[in-house]
Amino acid sequence: MTYFKEINKGEGPERLFIGGVHGHEGLTTIKPLSKISDEEVKNGILTIYNFDESPYISTLDRHYYTSDRGKEIVGLIRDLKPEMYVELHCYNSNSFEKLTNLNRKERAGVPPLIHLEKGVLIGSISPYIRTSLFDEWDVCITLEIPCKASKESMDIYLKVIKAVASSRDKHELLDKLRKDYSEQVETAARYAIELYWDGYPPL
Ligand SMILES: [Zn+2]
Image (cartoon, rainbow, N blue to C red; front, side, top):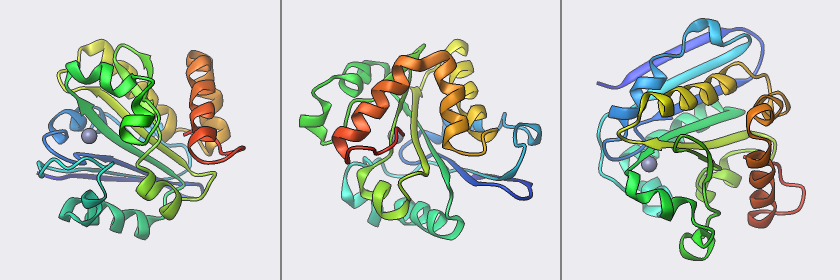
């Protein structure tokens, strides 16, 4: 069953978290998403959707955005116009190397995902929607965890989405992330410049 929750704390940013983007991922992403409580959000709105199973089409394949699930997600982004958008994904542990390999740019057209710790990976979202549906200074994050996640991995995953839920804007979020992951944030900034243009913000 699709999970939905809206936390509304009045004036402030619009945030959208999506799990169950494709395949069986919703079975994993429901766990952290259902743990976000009203107290995490200090201002603005957080809308959470976790979807059931759907055919697996990569978000790096343009056909994803003409699939039923892809159109549904684009519709939500257009309706809600989030300034902070997080896609929660999961991966099979044997894909770690492929997702984080420095040659991902040549192979898949996007920078490698960045390892935070405990198998939790962070990156931007599909280029098909990053620049067409969002502004430069919006926060757009893909977060990946092993589908069979350990408690340690799940704790890190949850920490990162709570950081987004409790931040007012990109500056506040980056300050929080830099405390534990300064090197990874620098790497994200470098990848953003390589993929888009000089001055493009990380994530
Ligand atoms: Zn995925």
